[in-house]
Length: 277
Image (cartoon, rainbow, N blue to C red; front, side):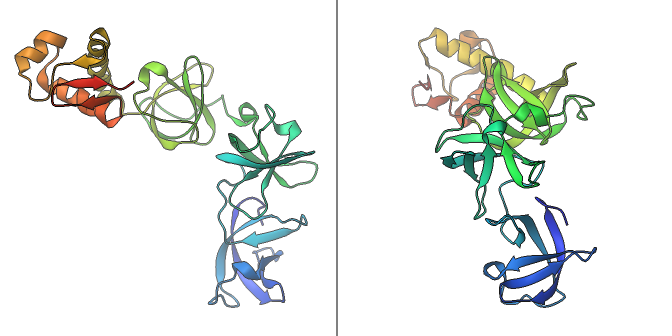
């Protein structure tokens, strides 16, 4: 039976407190009555999450936490006391992040990227915000152009940090950020480069698309900034006028303004394009 994981267990018997489940090694665990559906029967098989309850006993639940053992999540602090901070992770018992596992002191109501681990002293599930301790920097198994899963972290001077495939460290450079995204967002990304230090440079669009869009978006943005945030061009402007004013084709112009509008960077008016403040 794996603590902190989803376990596929068999219903062994019932009791006053609920149903008792068992694994293939004959270990038993209680599924409290509040998580038992009306149609659950002896010998049925069921998927449950196993964790420590308020009395530090292992129990099963049909509730799904926001993250399991060995995973990262974006969680909010709901209380703080003399042993640490407690975060809402979707279960009745909040997740403890002890002071020793806090990269900085966690503040009430704030959100943090947290790694779910086991406390070696108590064998209980806890959280840690010392994220770098749990990321892998050697034998990074991704390739340039590959689609990857991202959990976005904090902004730096270079760009936006991200956790890649729940195990690697990545960065989206500011020059490659055209979407309105923020810490805690989960989305697809693409590997731009794997560096010698094991960190991954990322894009938010496939590489071929990104290259063509990037160049034309940057051209339109540069023209907007040089004209105090407004261009007297629309998708109905002639190809000659567009070429003369900003130096790209009408097709490239339309794709670029469509992308910038989708990412909420510009507004489109009858008179032209306006850069959002």
